[in-house]
Length: 552
Image (cartoon, rainbow, N blue to C red; front, side, top):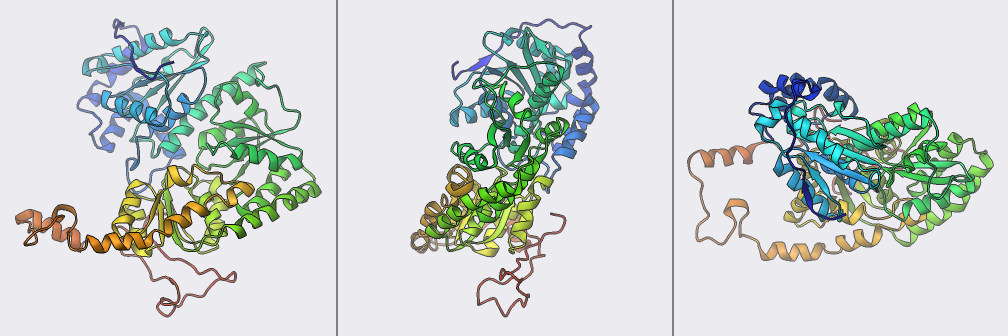
């Protein structure tokens, strides 16, 4: 394998009898003028007219939109691309605008996936004539080599989805190689996390149907002697090992991690007795496990409360006796408490991200001693996140699903935390306010979270960042008066905008914040105690109130 971008030759000849041709011609009017720059509503209308209405309807159920109609992070297709590129013996082909394909392959290589990515180019003529479908069909026939691949994944990006390029018409299998066609449009899939679910769910569906039809390949290491627990969600490499150690006293073993790294691992995952839904946004994946008759246990063993609850619920779902569950709890809970005692976190924190593990991290920080004020996640509220949400809210933490960038930045401005953990623009906003910030994806989520290993994993980096507050204050004082934005710099007189520009700036300055005015006073330390006489809850944690109309 190389790290090059492969352009598959355009050699197909249009065939009026081909099923893709008619579908594409029907979409000609819808496709005309539709590009990446088009409003999401126009793209969605074009896709519905081109025959993709049912697909978008299912996506709307699985991945409900938030206050914004497009992803505010990276292109969602990066998530499905990442899943495919991490699997052995899996080929990947993208169908989309060249600029999108370039950006996706650049990002995938940046994150270390040195794998070939196939690309089927198109122009307006091939898009509306049906020739693009024919080119894709020829490409999968060319790539489907059983000596090298178990599966070929073809992904439609925004424009082919809006134009109705019918990947469902591709052969399901070619010479034993499975052909998996998915649509991942930015106007129908809110986050890259949920795009992971689209491909992982599509693959698991095929694997389930194969297992139901007859014998399938066993895992390379053979079947486990103990009943297994499938683990759903990308995680730190050491976490599955730690989870296995925690399951051992229950007489269980850690099964494959879904999304898997190899096709045959999916059969083993389906063979598990219980599914640990560590990340809550894998809606399509959980649907396939449910169809296979496997019970799903949400959340994970984070902190003392989370670990005690998780061990109990996993044990009960697997039919483990109560005394064995109690024994496992007694083995691990003291070690977790000890890790928290050795590595406390003292400070006020806001936490935001788009990975789907934000609530788990927040629980760890709260049990470490941090005063977590706000948790915003770009992912949706699901039944599998209920336990984490209820636990956090019972301790006064404001939890917001489908949080927008504007919400997250407004939370930093409103709460003025000692540390802001979040996405790049949120961290940038915090640093502009002289508040230390940490990038969630690289510095927080890339650490063990579960069991004793997770209990003390965050203290060093979090406390170290909060310890830099004095440095930010010095920098802020040094650059005091140099302006910001279009007035940045040293001027004899402050620059003045004229005409409509000045009026626009005035409107921006006088406009309400992104939290949209319905922000009620909350207790923040002793100074605010008299301003908002809200009764404290029985456990001593004070309620937070940080609300916006129309947002969960």
